Length: 478
Ligand SMILES: [Cu+2]
Image (tube, rainbow, N blue to C red; front, side, top):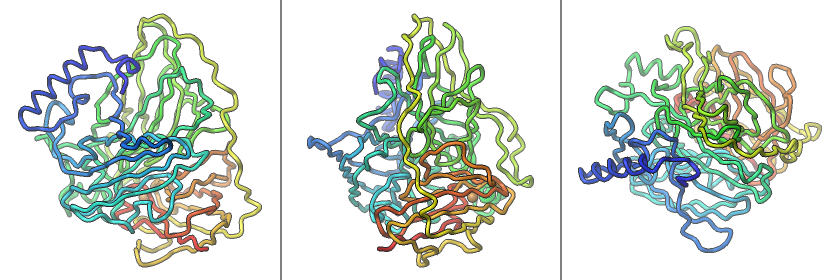
């Protein structure tokens, strides 16, 4: 974290350190940046323990701990390295990554490296549980051309929703040697999540068989408190006319963010698998569960203020639609300073090439039908392979949602390219590992299984649905 880059006033840092010391003296582990600072703070960065060039070796520990998440109240959570979101894994294309993972929880877990193209046995899927008190090393290489924003989270079947709700999720950033965006641009990471608290400050997990549990099972668990990097309504400072690059991750279990900034259009430059070929100007962006977006945001007139807002988004069936679903929710404040205007930066018209996957070479077509709680009329079974694909094959998948609510589809291990939605051609190419499939919508994409044979998950990324069995297994065979 760079205080100068964040424009973080020294007094806020000092104040948060004092609160941290006070709470530490009470025997509580806390994150200093969560206390008094209203300026958005980046999550800590995982320390690289290797001195070898091109090697990133880190230690990641999941444990139960206590954090001051809101209003000074101490909350029992699960955290990676004592922090929620967990520390960011900073990588470069081509890096060899070694993660020494330790499970200090009292229950099994896994760590899934969401969106990364890696060997199947390193994916941290439900096939790879790490028992309570257990350890395992993950080893993989960051593919060339995969620069982008990814994330990591647990993926133990029936327990993913619970463990993420307790605080286990963190960002992965992969950088390219030839990033086309000017280096002068300040970069921000925004890990979006929501949470629900009881009056005593504890995390509100629905009692089994309660009405709340039934609603969570249907909608996916949502919380009324919106967090950016674990902070409620933080501020991002920006200079007049300054352009900032924001990497945004939707790490919420079920909430879909429909993002807008009143008073400005957003330059959308990338999604799950990295930058687009060209920037696209938009008024708003729907970011479904597990999706990432990269955007460019511009500072306003000196001293003005606006917000990043989540507009109402109706993904629900009428019976369980939240009463306040149509209320816009502000996520953070964008404060333009009175500093001199920033020097203009040129945004390239072409960012990079996104090579097309050739649909004419597709040898297999498959259909994934999303029902409520099931895929192709079946619940997930760890012992069953649903689809078998040949290594090297190009395939076209049709994901059809036949029910009355949205289900975001995610495929492990492979980035795909959306071809069309409800027969309407996708306006431009991008690399995706997750795509929201709206109620009654059909999405078609092309994917190539170029490497890494083995068993891979595909599932709905509403975590409650995934835990209920809206998941299947694709086996890629030589
Ligand atoms: Cu779903």
